[in-house]
Structure formats: structure tokens, C-alpha cells
Length: 441
Picture 1 (cartoon, rainbow, N blue to C red):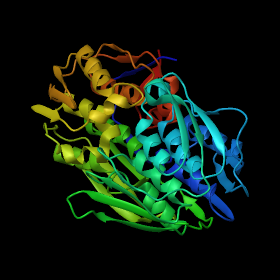
Picture 2: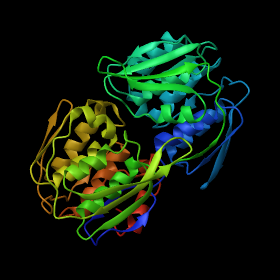
Picture 3: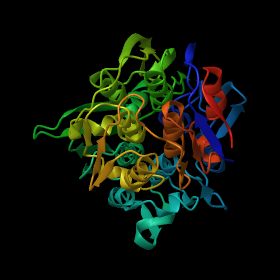
Picture 4: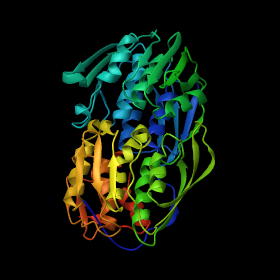
């Protein structure tokens, strides 16, 4: 399916974006590892999360829910070795976190994915899991397909990660649930802490804080006995980013985005918007059963945006939002320099290269850096648009350039849109309900 977006009237309304994808994966996983029943309200029913649910059922968990109902999860007495491969489609988070869980259980599973996921590196997850006692085998280049035979007694380790990666950290901590002692991960800067927050809410002993040498430490003490509980999944800030960016760009817009996760490790994009001069405010309103702060985001279109140079040390807090930040930079005044985003080379696509190609196709002067982008802002109404964007199956590239089309001089079309459902089911309908002119090409 192809979609187009073109300039139209203002975006207005108060709406809750879909549930957070990262938290949804973890809620299912911890429910499948805990005693008793876990109830999950607001689970994102996108393709990526549903792939994790299918994999956990194949491993023996009892999981029911769907169509907006509360999901219920019960752990199996013993995890089983599924006869068929666990197919995670496009979901790197689901695959890598489930690898950590399987590595700490006495079972064997084969992991596969779609063409995009099969190009993404897995060795940085598999190496620490092997040190913990799991038997791991990967395809050429340390990629999928992957076979893991877990251990009933994981060896606690201290893993020093060269990059801040919530997926690597989470895999180690998930495996360490059944170890005897502290499983530790040391990162150069803090990565997303959804795993630490949620596993603590389920009853595990977790420590986080500076490591003493300028880095960050996250550690879990095993064996941990998790207890099922009720979890409310907040709205996804990565999904909210697209509506927020569109409201900042389209003249006359005023949006309220409700029940959004305001985890400090996830709202760097909104702080970047504020630094660019966007009329945006965050209103905290409590937390969820999984330890996540939630609140409301208010955005109004303003007089214009200015270029920024984000601190590369803070890019991890909004690594998934770099493509949509680049779209904002295209409409700003001045030169925006984004660095520290090298991990984007290994997402669903090479997002640095894909963002650059899309910007240039829309008439924006931009330059590729080894770990980021240099973007010459064209001003509030200065982006030409009028291009067909090659998304290479990447949902965030597709959504980012549809947002660009809402403020460009000429419509923008994306060559593939079906994969948007991996993270944002009915994105087009969501944006249309706010007044955006997005439709099938």
C-alpha cells in the first residue's frame, strides 16, 4: 500500500497515541516469567508485539487478549522447546529480549525473522549470553537464524558494553533472573531503563546508578521470584513524536497527546523540540503499575523553529526519533548537526542513509556524517516536497516523510506503508482524525 500526505488545514484535538511498543514487549515477557497471572491493559497490538506474544505461546505461556481487551498472561510450569522456529518478523526488540529469556531457561529455540531483521547484528547479544552458559549458534556474520539452548543455572557476569543498548542490557538481565548473584551491565551512558523499572515492579532486586568510572551500571540479583501483577501500558512517546512534529509544523495546529510515557530516557525528542523553539509543554500525571511516569503533552504551532546541535551523549534518549527530528530540522532556520547516532545504521534500514535520501528528494540540502546528519534548514514553508520516498520497509522513515508532506509545498508519497503497522496500527486513520490530509496513493 502506498500513502501520500499533503498540506491542508490545522491539526487539532486531544487523543491518546497507541501503547508503548518497548513496554508492551516487556509486559508480555515478564508475565511469562512470573508466578500467577499478569493483566496488561493498553498493550500495543502491532505486528512486532504480536510476534512476541506468538513466540511466548510457543514456549509454553498462556496468553489471551486482543481487539483492545485486557491481555492475560500466565507462565508455563516449564518452558518447552518449540518444534518450529520463533518468527519475530521485523521485531529486533522482541527477538533479542526473548533470546535473553530463553538463555536462562532449560529449553532450546530457533529464532528467525524477515529479510530486514535477518540483516541486523545479533552477536552483541549472543556473546554475553554464551558467557552466562547458554549454547548459541548464529548465521553468517552473527545474524539470524539463531539457535539458543538455555541453561537452568546461568552464570552471573559483569558485561561491559561498548555502546548504550537497552536490548543488550535487557537480554543479560533477563537471563540473570535465574542466576545466583548479581548480573551486571556497564554502559558508557544510560540506555532506556524499561526493563529495570518493570522487573523491579514484578519483585526483583535491581540496582542502577553511576559505575564509579563515569559509566552507568544496571544490575539484577538472582535468583529472582517474580509475581504477576496488573500493568497499564502508557502511550508510546516514539509514536506521539510524529503527531507532535506535525502539529509544530502545520500552521494553526493545537494538539493534546494524553497518557504518554514520560520516562526521562524516552522524552529527549520533546526536549529537542523545545530547544528548537516549539510551543510544547509536558504535564506529569502519575505512573503506571510498571513503574513508568505518564502525562500529557501539549503542542501548538509557533512562529518557526531554529536549528540545534543536540548533545551526542543524549542521542540514545531519542535514537528512534532522529528521522522525524531531521524533518523538523528541514523546516527550521539554520544548520542542524546530529551526531552520536551511529546505531541508526543497524535498524530496520540504514536510517541515516534513508533519511538523507528522503530529505534530498524533497529539496533539502543535507550531508551524511559517519554517525549522523548535517541539515540546512529551509525555513517554515521552504521545503519543496513533491517526491516519492523509497522507505526500504522502514516504518519510521515512512511516517517521518508523511509528516514532512503535511507541511511541504507539494505532496509527498511513500512507496510502502503496510509495515507502519509494526509500531503504529492505523497511523493514517489516527492522523486523519486530527485533520491531516493523508490517504492512499
